[in-house]
Length: 277
Image (cartoon, rainbow, N blue to C red; front, side, top):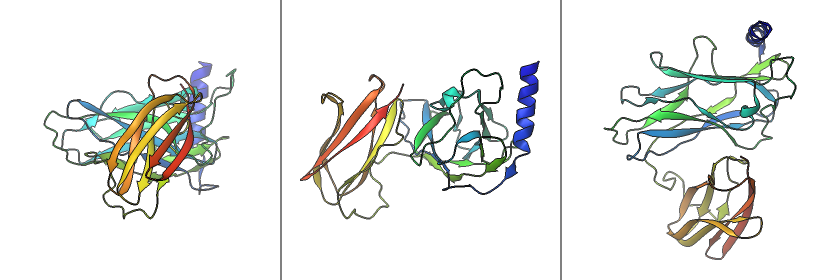
């Protein structure tokens, strides 16, 4: 009974918070753009967060457009650190209304023995959850946009800070289901070689690495463990000039620090990443 009363009080308190501007740099929610393999009946859509605040509550209702292609949300979402430490993370498919209800509370029980971890990425992009979509057999690569909507109960997208007195709308970048090309065709030819920091970081179990080539190049991207052993060879081919991304799935690797290295023509660079399971 006490737990039920505390939950009710916490929800009421959250609804009574002041809706204000983001107190620091603008926090963001990013829906990753993914591709669909016709051999599978579903796709995984990654959701990323970028914050410089200690977020203790979120409301992230997501819709899909258009809705007449047969694509629709599937099973319950998969959550990652630090949401896996929170008291409550909740998602429900409102199929008739056309959106996914996504809510989470960080620490609303006064008798909690171990404090939960707020969502604070210090400006980095973290993979916080993955939602699943079912794709019909007759799917023919038509684009489906994943976008934020307004929940009839919880309202629009929102973050709340510790203490329950400040609530604000994070920036939102939508993605969609589309055929993977491997290259951002709308980008201009890069001016130089570059290797970006992977995102999310820390990650579990997969992360994305972006890189740029100013000219056709023989490209190699390898992943090493902390002892210098090659764990994975992600790219080993000749590629045209452009902007690229590659995903490393570390499902079979243990928690730890890893390094990824690009070698393209005379350009070489190494960056560090962290896998947490």
